[in-house]
Amino acid sequence: MKKITSFFALISLMMLFGSSLTAQTRDRTEIKDDYKWDLTALYPSEEAYAKAKQQTKDKFDGIEQFKGKLTNSAQDLLSCLDYQTDIYKEMLRLSSYAGKKSDLDTRDSKYLAMSQDMNQLFTDFASKSSFVDPEILTMDKAKIDAFLASEPKLEVYRFYLYDLLRSKEHSLSDKEEKIIAQAGLISGTAGSIYSIFKNADMPYPSVTLTNGENVLVDQAGFGRYRAVENREDRKIVFEAFFNKFSEFQRTFGTQMNGNVQSHMFYSKVRNYNSTLERALDANNIPVAVYHSLVENVNKNLSYFHRYLDLKRRLMGLDTLYYYDLYAPAVKGINLEYDYDQAQEVVLASLKPLGKEYVGTVKEAFDNRWIDVYPTPGKRSGAYSSGSAYDVHPYILLNYNGLYSDVSTLVHELGHTMQSYLSNKNQPFQNALYPIFVAEVASTLNEALLFDQMYKNTTDDDLKINLLMNYLDGVKGTFFRQTQFAEFELRMHEMAENGGQITGDSMTELYKDIVHTYYGHDKGVCVVPEYINVEWAYIPHFYYNYYVYQYSTSFTASTALAEGILKNEPGAREKYLAFLSAGGSKYPIELLKDAGVDMTGPVPFDKTMSRMNWAMDELEKIMKKKGL
Image 1: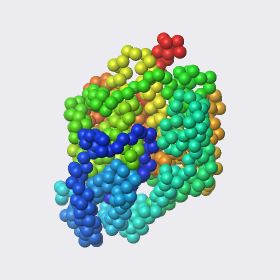
Image 2: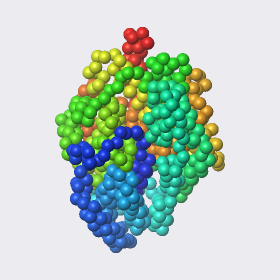
Image 3: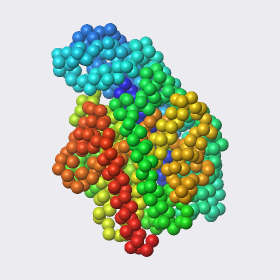
Image 4: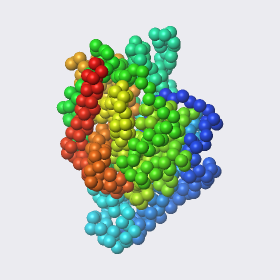
């Protein structure tokens, strides 16, 4: 099933490119079990995992018993699809366990090998079962409808079967599909090389700060020191970090070319007009949605420039530079929460979603669904994993007690609740929700957290801090991701029109886009020349048109959150139904059922309205304080 193998490939890629957040580690033995994962819900032991993996692998050859029989009867089709589904369901559970064992200590080659082995298993089974889709596609809709009518148990496959018919012109023969499946092992080579080089082999620079301290500016160091209060130190760190990337831009350009060529290969062999069309067709997203996002953001960059000017004024700067963007706009306010306090804040903020929702979140807190604290070797960043259908989702955190950590927690709980409710209410065949909607639940939770915090404070300095946190989120999740989406689109279009993907050409393309977005030529924010190579630092360009979905999800969640917070009739019920719908419909239809039409202007307009409300609030307080 293409949906499942594509889902696994994307999840594997996202794990590979985990965010690099700094964290204060502690020895794992010093942490109470209450704050660590209990993985026995997946498998009681590593021995049980190994046994289950072998048993699953032993079933691979069995899929071939159905070859040539799928069109004989509804029962034969059902038997094959059930057999295939059972294997995929167990493999997702296996990969969930292996990945988590590796993420708890990335230094342990044993667990890394376990995780990597799952990639091979998925490829092997995809190759053996590659005959299934082409054979089904020898039937027309009338015959499939007759099968569905005669065998009620086939109903869980209706959406899958109809989706196959929809994409029939892009499907290949049995032999060709087998080759494509085998090619999966090499198609991600460019991304793998990029990750290994950037994360393990790249010689990051050391710099001397203004206080005489010598620090290593690797990815973790850059994440830490780009936000320090001393402006000269920020400049030193930015310049050293990106100048190092410039030294290797030819290498990064070659890697990116391999990535883009892979996307073009799959688009051509599957008869798509463009790489964008192929990427969006998996979820039946009109390409107009992508183009409209980029066009609308460019038309409304004045709002982004207004935010940048507010940040400049709050920081007391004559001119805003790119290296100022991550520094705190409000000094002296450090919102800190221990983990117990964070749970209280999160539970209070999620009350608008109802008792059942809040009760399940509390269950996640109380029953070791979350691995909370950073420990030596633990994977950086955060994620939620809900692909093991018969088991509750798991969340990985690296909690340090900052407000941003509370925001991360509530964000990941959004993913967790969508997985939990989808798995609870949908059969496995329809439980995996499309990536297009994946960030809706997470960013909606962040909106509820902001509302809870803002309406319960009277302190103007704290209000400024919260408003800037929100606006920084709009910058990072909406404008910056759309900026990336435009770069990705124009990069692929360049290659499709015969242009060359090199370090130099990518740097020139990125310069054009980043200057426009940040108003460099208008004096809004000065973008130093070394920033033009920032494209080489962004791992998301290896995700194949993924980043635009951060922006579209943000606009959708803004519209949905507004209805929930205003207690509009049916808003909460529709949203919870959306979370429970899994992948039972195409994402545009899922959101439309929830009350948001992503093909129209309303979500975008509401996002801009909300952003301007926050800036209006900010300016009122600034005027009151004489800022």
